Length: 65
Image (cartoon, rainbow, N blue to C red; front, side, top):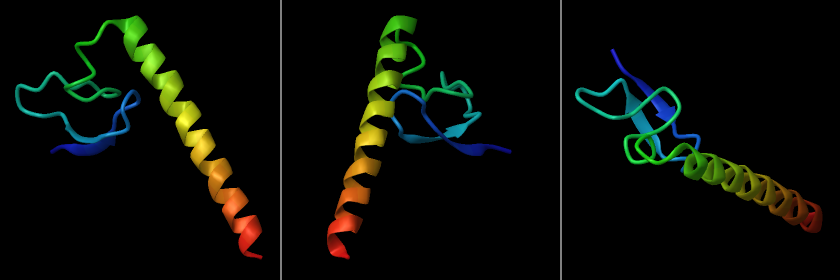
């Protein structure tokens, strides 16, 4: 039985656990082998992008009124 998860570093959806996959509970098979400092930087940038997308959506919703 596998779950559909979202990578904390790149926001891609992936199956976990995958057969012979490098994926972990938090990172997809592409991000899991990256050095820890690189993954942490990607996670910070992803959170910033997510926050900015929410702010833009709120601004657009406010202009539509």
